[in-house]
Length: 241
Image (cartoon, rainbow, N blue to C red):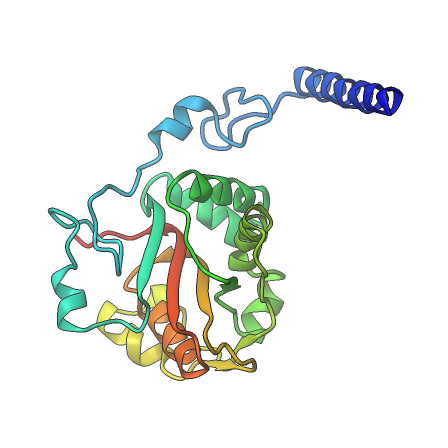
């Protein structure tokens, strides 16, 4: 047994030496500024410059409030989701990271965002479910960015990741192209659920929360199928001016 342990230790040390040698020979440049960043996507300076979602904030929608109370909008119109957890503010340079993931297939960004999400507030629940894309959008893009962000989160938390349980059945106009007031109407009845979620606390994963219209409609559908708590876990949150 001692011999096996020493062999395992030797393999571990050897792998560490090889990894360090590869990093020193093939250093990575920071995605944002181009400076050396070792094996990291961003250098320390660019990472520290990422705008953090401040506290205190509304527990339901994650918008800042003076003492962490529920914001006026959530009091006026209670969303179907119960909580929102986020780590970054959607603005420069976070927008460049997310756009690179979605439109230039920089999948390493998904893992990096997941790491930042885990270092901030961790959502609680029984399973993770990424917001689905329509079949047309999925064919165009080739992947769902919410799925790619959710994978490392599910692995770290040891929770099931349900990718095929819900569908986006209508190919709606992109929410970002519409005025805020029209987004809720645009996304109405866009989702379909094919599984029983009775008694489940569902963690919904997405890249960005803007008005919350998409997440609200998705939560409405999940609760129709039995979910008792729906928590949004997003990489970035857009702040209202």
